[in-house]
Image (cartoon, rainbow, N blue to C red; front, top):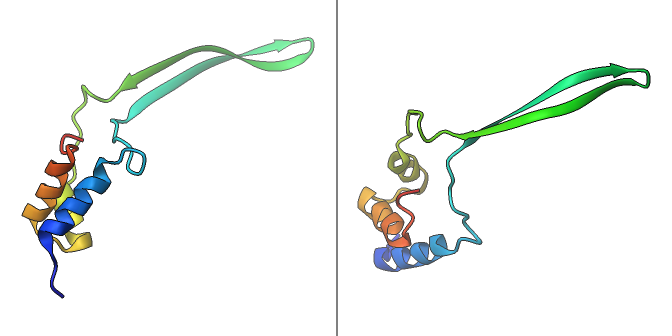
Length: 93
């Protein structure tokens, strides 16, 4: 099968540029909620006392090889995948 690589790059770049179809990838966050148990005459109740949220920006995590993953799934060359991601403006995600 003959593949028109430049045409494929243009179509994929346009599709990835549509944030409605492919929303922006955001780093994960950790949220902790704190509550206490209050026992009264009317029974046991939970009372929300606090919440904390933190992004994982300062933590080091192992990043998977995205190129190899995509390459194994769609059988495109590394340079074609790079051209698609670079052209979409979403390479940093």
